[in-house]
Length: 190
Length: 214
Image (tube, rainbow over all chains, first blue to last red; front, top):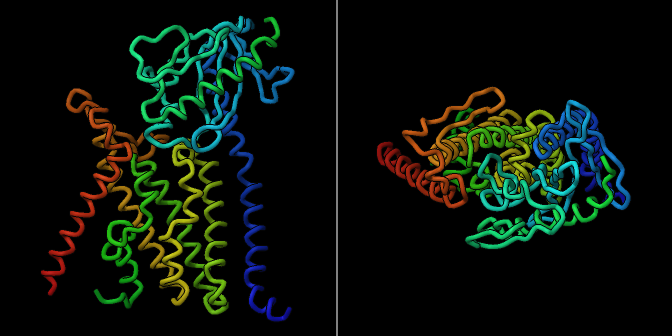
């Protein structure tokens, strides 16, 4: 026992001191980190549901993440934003899916968290008009989105996979399809 | 090359002659991964400087109390703690960049540069010597990353971003240089190409310097 204490006291003491340090850092930064995350979420909602002025979560039976009712300036429902998460190539992918007010059309998707391979898989979070997620804008929400590879003429509701990142492309497609399937029919009438 | 004898030499050694990235070829994983923009390189460099400083400082302060066979455990414990603090700080204050760096900040825990400095210098040197070493190596690492990132970002995205939030970003005229013509430079192959060429140039300079000095 004495030998054990002699050889390990420093590890034990350091462990305790570092634990206190970490707890301090966690408490002092967690508020700010939460704020950053909320802001990112709100920006994403505004992007996937055009015309959103404010949004509030609505409960959807059987769906454990948030679904937001997005309202425009005139109080009318501009659309719905679904917070969805699923497994990607490296780790979880979190994204926001926008649906039109009648729930029939995908108005956009936006990936807010991902650690997919830089340069390949992380194109799922690309920004700008030619970015990969733009393919989802305007697709029908009533039927499944289908992922195809290197196909010339896309049929309805087909999206092109990212070259070299089929798994990431599939993951996003699956998350979108699953979330829409679970939420769409249960949306309250606006 | 003689072993550094003064603190200043220790500092300079990490910066140039013993640059952790360009000469020792350590820490290749973050080097290749985050050198696609100067902003990423600077933030990553700052995180490494912070962790390296704290790890060398604590190792050096405790150097007479650390039992040799648990030293690696203590290094890892120290490094992991300060990497976590650095990661939380980045997520609180530079959220966008920290999202881009993704797993590479937490991965500083297993960055061999830091454990190598603790093992080779801090465990057997005075506090000032260890700090000089940490800053030399940390700044050397940042410098190497910034050199790679400037080349890659300029060619791959047609501009340089130092700090997006402060508006410190410059872009070449799209008429002169098509921004994404060389997009391969910000992708993984560009990292290897640039690193190889920069290491080649550094070796050339060092070889000449050695000849001139002899």
